[in-house]
Length: 173
Image (cartoon, rainbow, N blue to C red; front, side, top):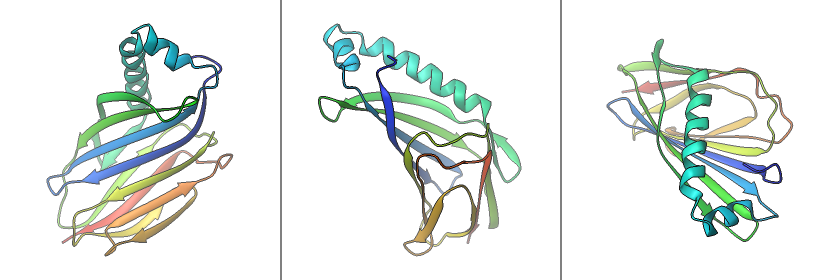
């Protein structure tokens, strides 16, 4: 990625299935005033860049320690895509999957990572099946539990210390 390309925003979606499989979609938005990605597309080199981005994302995920009910799970990047939102805004989307064992009652998701300061605003959405309930949330920024208690929306602003871990307790009927 060129130094002129600047990350400006991110969104992350977690869709939790009743069998314990979690599909995660992460979208990063970049300001690309000099058209770095457009130039790569014109040269037919976007695929190579996406391959590099996918490897880098997997490397970041491999450094994290993700647990579901105290059992380590390993998120795996299964795909990536690049889209041109406008002439100067590009989005990179990563599709990620991991699976853990769930149980009736209280379940715990934990993610441990290197401490950092948010470089941009972001939102995170956790969508659990109907009837499930988000019980408690420990993560940087603010959050709200919506829907029938089965959707978690969290957000943080640029410059906030996002710490080194997050935890979500949720109830499975």
